[in-house]
Image (cartoon, rainbow over all chains, first blue to last red; front, side, top):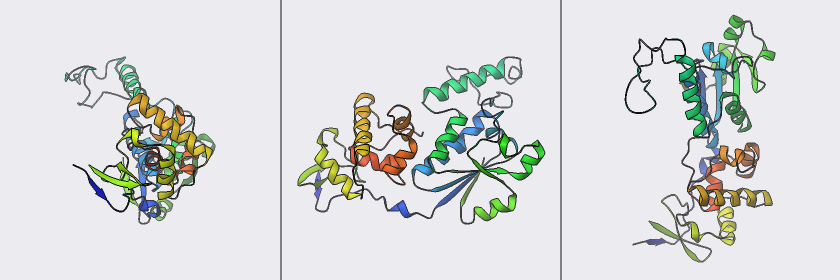
Length: 176
Length: 104
């Protein structure tokens, strides 16, 4: 049984004028830990939300030109790492063996690609094209002896901690 | 399932107002849907809408923004220009397909 309404039912896109603002602190350089912020930032942008990503410490690898194409995934210390089929866990004693990291990295990359989700550099392209803002951490740049030329072109600037805190006034924050 | 009257016809929609019956859509209806959300349809809009419908028909799933760009050839910046702020949802609404299910 359907109920006909008088006025046309129109989706509410009024959130268009949202002042919601969200910022992600990306502190990890492992392949698997690069994705959560990228996926969520991309989703936030698709909702018209002002979105910032701040790369710090190990997360710096995500935006360092010479490293961003080659992030790794390691099963070491990850008890949720299973065999490709079934619920069989990979024993932690085997996780550090030679060959395990490349194998696990390839496996996770294939799974991500199968979903049509891009690799990290291309994902950053998408986020920048969608209007997202990328920032690099001053202390991390100094520790790694990196300058803006070493970083992914979409990074707007290297900023310090106070700049970031100031910039994210009123924003929702996620530390990853 | 609610129904609503658009352009003098009864149209089946979900609770938010997205069309639920693929076949109830036509181009005249799309023009009304676009006007409802203040989108002025250009040829580029039509190209995006037609790809979205064809892809939904073929895949059973609405293309995400990423797929619109990688398969549909409508680049991401363009999507945000055509359907400001909420490109995937606005495009889906006008194209008469559900909101995309995929995360990326």
